[in-house]
Length: 63
Image (cartoon, rainbow, N blue to C red; front, side, top):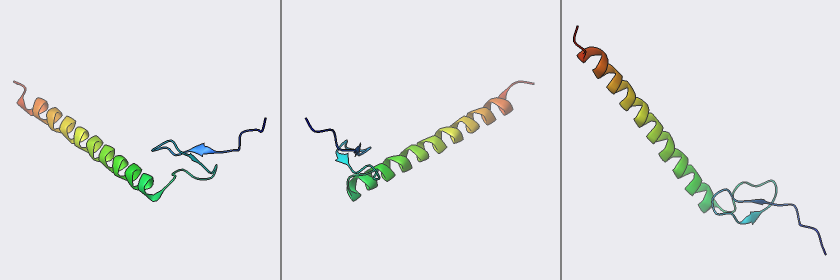
């Protein structure tokens, strides 16, 4: 019974790839980059919403 050939799996689609690669194709790399950008934008949006809420609460409290 032969051994398993050293390999990794594409982090997007799961296909077997060479051990020194991260993606199996340019399409998977583009999909990964698009998702990372979407997540970064969402994080920035949530942080700004938090700051806005904090600002409203700080300056609308009765004195």
